[in-house]
Length: 230
Image (cartoon, rainbow, N blue to C red; front, side, top):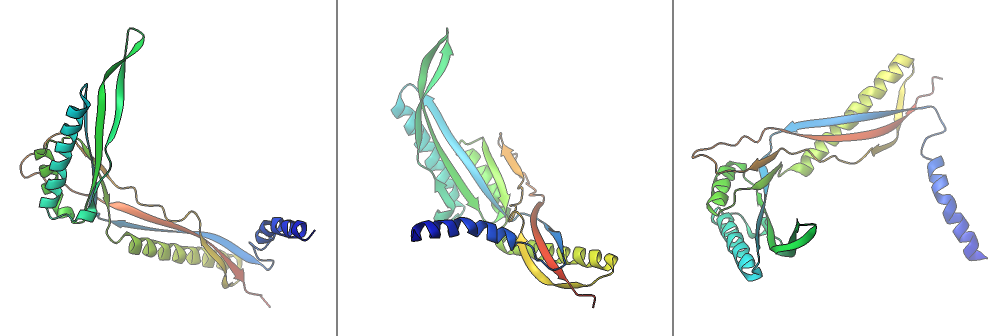
């Protein structure tokens, strides 16, 4: 009987939480948005080396050779070992449709390597080194080393925006803003949408790469109590 009572009480908890979400006293609820526009200072370069061959050992040896050259190129630029993520090798049979039937064309071998470059000024050197290693297709995602700090700044701006909105509302309504009842992030931090850069051919000598800008956004929801007019 005690277990049944405890289970019933547990089921009632969400309802009680919902009931306490908003105050019973007069209040105003507002949303605030904060945004920062910054220049990326780091890059994550994703390289995939792949080979398909009827002879699995030949395909694997070719992939391992090219992957070793990529890793060696990154190390030569002084990139730390923990910033070179060489995933495990993947192998699967590859087929093609011929005369309404699947025909084995060979064994496909691939390896994915993610290189974190924490100094964007070396980006052109890294791209050149990858091309020299025989890699001509890769993706780059730009980011910031101090992303966590920038996210907090965006969150603070969102809170300031919410306060300004609430103040404008109560002033227009002829009342006064009271203390904060609750404050929360609406959807959490939205990571910036980094610029995706794909290189499909060797860069010309002296090529320059501009990282552009990226936005860091935060949104909050704030409930303020209203001061008693009396």
